[in-house]
Length: 356
Image (cartoon, rainbow, N blue to C red; front, side, top):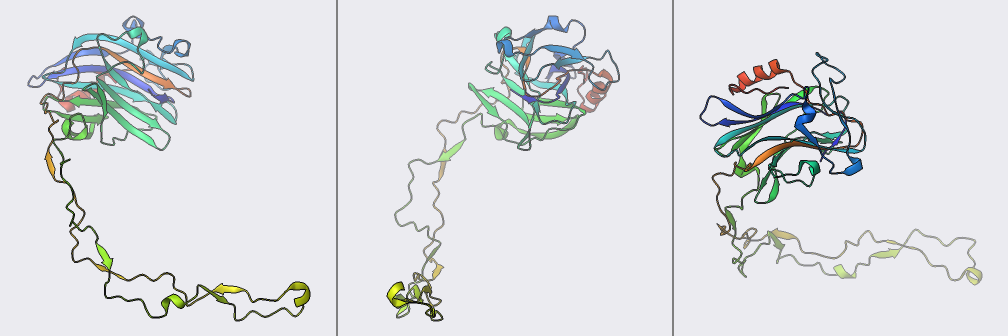
């Protein structure tokens, strides 16, 4: 889900690149031109709370005919999806790429793309629907500003452990996710790498290789005390005889005090400047200190390696957007083919036909 305020998602393409091939196979590409409504299914997941989609060129544009998908109403859910050829990313480099634009100063918004199994009921697609990959920016106030990269593995959704900052201005930005068969990944914004690394290290999809030995216990003679009381330090004689409070020596009985009517006058008590509190011996370094005890590591019997960790897309046949609009949030998808083709050349992904 995403709460939005002026989000614009440009046309996107879903590509799988043969790892050793010079050519890219485009599994899905959308420009939201004429006939887009025949390709996309509007969900009824939230019933009457589902918002209405339209198309628009946006507030600022270079081509009035270069339109994109747009939400129209505040406080509505927006769920929409389209079929793709059924595919998996096994043995291939998968590229998911689309553009996002926030047409107003962003308060709270997001634009996620999801790869869904071919069996999903598109008429009921929504936040509860199963997916293999979820990717896109999430911005809400000052506390949440990150790019989500979520993989479904072993029946669970696994969030990336890295903090990837999205763009928050009102310009169009290209978001790209690349997942490779060597179990590495790369996230780009505006065709510039902002994060890369290992699927093994940056997600907790697998059990850890080692664990603390559950059968190991701290020895009885293991001393974790870094400091101890100085056995040579002794409490001074008469230390406990010093009272906490004493009679104020400067106090004087008021001249108008009447013992018969006011009672016997008593001087007030004040804190004793000589009183130093409970006596405690000074601390010294413990010669028997061994440090904090830590259980030794052992091989995790539950660890199962997966050399195909990257292959999370098993039977994808649907792609979708799922959003929640709090304030007015146009969500658009548009294209500018020449710009993307220049970016493709820089990426060295020949025949990649994606648009922004």
